[in-house]
Length: 294
Picture 1: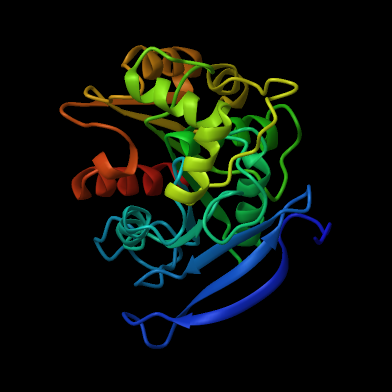
Picture 2 (picture 1 turned 135 degrees about the vertical axis):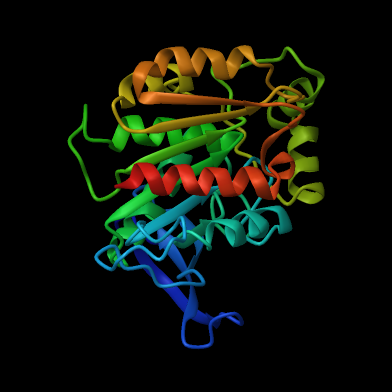
């Protein structure tokens, strides 16, 4: 396995974008700082936006070189239909980079359920920067929602010094505020899946997700602690009031920790993560990201 720097390309090929014949989507394997290969897909979007040009009236006209980097939920991957639907929605606002977290899809390694996945996201953001994007919005769902928060805290401008892996805008959808939550039946099932050998077998063969057998050591920064560290980066927290995994005290804790740098949308009737995010909500997220990206 390669031990090159995050963002290093180990294999690549181009896939035609059927909607824009003169542009192509790129698929590459990136290598994280700890040597894991990550399957990533870059799509330029259906429209080329120029921030210096007069506004066309389209909400994305001011987005310039904005790229959306989408962090999927646990057991997802870049090719899952619900992830592709999210990518298609954001392509109306800018370029979109999707990827599969470690242990998911065609990526290497094993899932650490939100811990070392920050390295995967960092590699994806670096690739977006290498492709010329001056503004990057990270958008995460469920596990990915917790990852974008920790990633912003660890790679952002405030505490560690701004790097090419830092996001400009952060959107966290259906994320937990704290670790080891078992207050709902879906989360109790998830803990069985992650912590039990038979559960990990179900994950591998039933859900196409390879889960690491080791416990966290040390326990990573919690999402709510991360939010307090990432301010003043623009942050949008989105959560459904019918989320079956994490009740509404989770987003409220995150919003309180974010203070004036955060905005909370509690969505009536919404369930959990990508499957529950309808097209209207995705458009509103796209509008918000464009308006905050500058």
